[in-house]
Length: 299
Image (cartoon, rainbow, N blue to C red; front, side, top):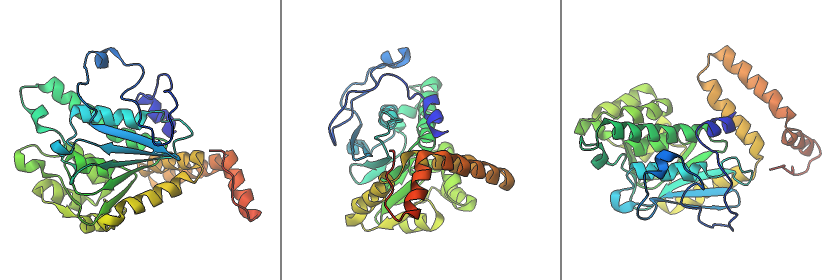
């Protein structure tokens, strides 16, 4: 189950205080492990998050540094994604960014030999956890991209369930140009676009336009910049209007069957359909359809 995946990645601890619509989420978990307690978080958080009507909006908020996925940014993003992940009030997450760059990828100042391999390992481990967390999360995660997304920033877009971008956006994995091949971005990229497209991006580092990204499957849709938020929120509201248990079950099953052979995939999907019928919302939806009325979801 998707919820189990989130729990395995650390969605534990006491609940947070209730907040009104669009109230910003707190700066961190109520309780931290020893390692976190030893690492202070000076200065403002590099992400911000608000929630209303089942939609959590997470914003990468460090445009001066091109929203680089520094370790602090990754940990902040991780907290915003995990915050009350299993709350029935949460239906969908939208990730966007301030400024002309969605994300330039890792902060290269953190990747010099001054920090050393242990710090480097923590950066890439945390980044990988965030990307896997998105797929394992019980609700859909939508990327709203307006501008450049490179390296791990492109990885973030590729990791989201849905990606909507403005026509001014572009995407690249340019690490090879500076001697740092985008191996971890390639994991998500290689699962989002055809192999030869991914390898061309990885081998050349050249940018891909939004329309090309749409053509190859990196994006769900491309819209004019002035319509980006409207279209993204239309999708988010549609998802938020549906049954959370049904969507959560379906998301988990979709990703689980992808890695299987055809026969196993159909076996897993068939069992999921049976499980879906056993959900109260599964029966409510069918009854509402037969009775020609709008369904009343449990969540």
